[in-house]
Length: 395
Image (cartoon, rainbow, N blue to C red; front, side):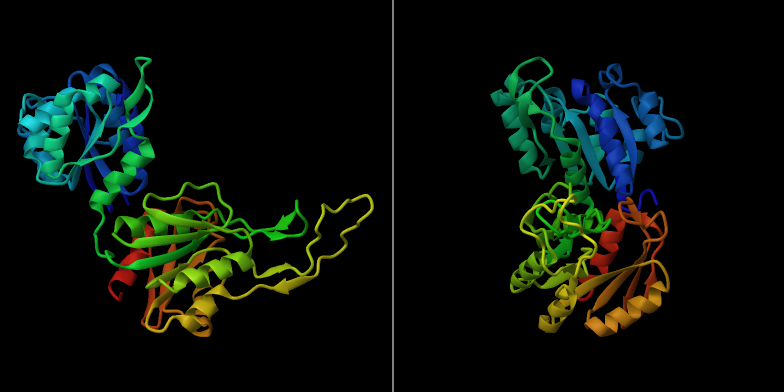
């Protein structure tokens, strides 16, 4: 549900990268945030307010005197927001914020904000490197304003250098970090994610439909909440979450060894990977030729049980497993909880379109010795935080 992750004020300034603010807005919404927008007059020359109004579902504040439903929009928006994000933060607006100048709706609103503020600078390299801009950035940092970027690269003017707006994912991630509780600081969290590939020969393998999205969302959320996170990943196309140490593996055996080794220094293990239950007993050392090496059958052998082995070694530490089922979900989850000795089983029905492999949402039940907590369908980030909430109350 929109707004569950927080309320974000998006402050859009007059730079060529203003169009990227639309993508930032969408990224925040996808993560479960409610977003409202204020813009400078110059920003409206790059992207019209109607675009942001349509995307956000709320009026856009461009003036202190023409905001529907409020005579004091700067105060209403400032008090409404849990975080403010300035995209792209121009040299002019950075200077105004540093000096406390409030001469339009955007800067007046930001001056009234008591919530955390994130600025994402975007400008020409020479403007960014100017001592005045650097002094203003230093002033803002000293006041607790957070910065993301800028990156280096080819700029809109053709110059190459620092000043390029940070990526949308970086900005959204930094904004979500401002909204996340820091209740896992000092905790070491181990997560596995994705499928495993079990070799038939050097070219072919047995796998499953897992994309790793759920595990990566857990690792990302845990890092935002202050944990030291190690992610053991099977083959995926996903980017490593910021601040997360990633170990890449391919097979179930490799994942087993990596998880057991990393668990020695972990406080919590979350096993969300879809690890193969079976692997070819004798994979070929060359590509099998259909013309002369008919593959009529593949002899399989069971893989090592990662969750059970972690539970056997956990002591007082927390171990969480997943149960992806297509029927009798809770019964199977309860049986798995008892058989493995886990503290929590996250059960999801992968026959449902909103909770199947590859979906951006999930509907899970948290099954523990204390009972069953059924959650509604939520974005993956919210599911991840619900799991971490359960852990944080016990860690």
